[in-house]
Image (cartoon, rainbow, N blue to C red; front, side):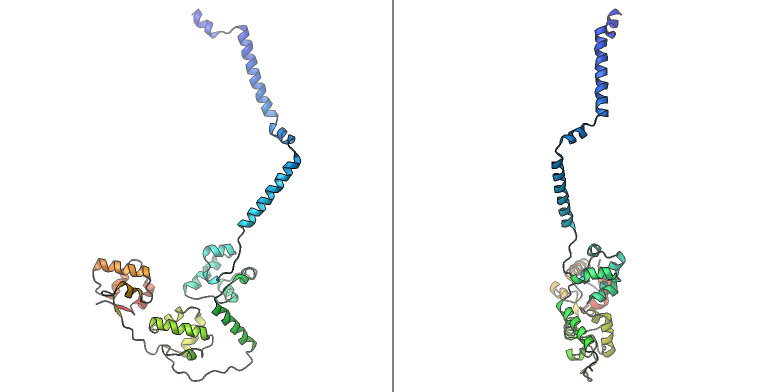
Amino acid sequence: MKKIKSHLWYTKNQRNGILFLITSIVGIQLLFHFINFEKSVLIALDQTKIKTYQTQLDSLRKISLADKKFKLYPFNPNYISDYKGYQLGMKTKEIDRLLAHRKKRLFVNSAKEFQKITNISDSLLNTIAPYFKFPDWVQKKNQQNKKKIIFKSQPKLRRVELSSTNINDATLNDLLFVDGVDEYLADRIIKYRSKLQGFSLPEQLFEVWGLDKETGIKIFETFSIVNKPIIVKTNINTASFKEILSIPYIDYELCLKIFDYKDEVAELQSISEIKNIEGFPLENYTRIVLYLHAE
């Protein structure tokens, strides 16, 4: 018992040592708590150097922000994406109006028309319009329209007789009879008509690049599809990949899907079966079957 007790009790010198140790620890803690050493170190630094470093940091920060700032370059407003529109400062509704316009295969040909479609503010239009870059034929058309406005008091000589009122037989000069149709647009209409082997559906005319809805309606006020073109259809069951790919409205991806489907069913009993192809563009079905049949 005495041995155990001797281990639990300290001598007077030991107790004094422990008390001194505890007092020292508490004192050091209080010293760190009440004295700001960081401030003392800063005071010791050269204030001139600190200001110099701060100025350099501010300069670097400004350069960094300038580099990150969005820079405008000439662009075609018809191909503004959601992200591009956001960068330009357009609202979501304004971007959606433009995308809906393009989904109809319609194009914007001037800054004024862009504002009419998107309904953007005058201030934003004045900021981004100088960077609009339209194809050369659009710029030439706009210049011609300006000339028409300047000289609109002068009588315009026009041909009275047309060689044909059938849109599939109309010549370039016939198409020029319609207001809003210049030589460039008339040439594109004829080339697209040749690609399709003739217009079978009125809506095919509106697929011509740069043809707006208003001008298309004017064309059909003068011309019509009198006789549908005679198109030699391709047998989907015997045609090669290259032959199917050459058909209007069929791109490479859709052509692959058609041949994958043919591998599954061996032979199509009816051309309407192509609607069963996964991812088939049903909106183009009436156009595609103008060129395909199954037998």
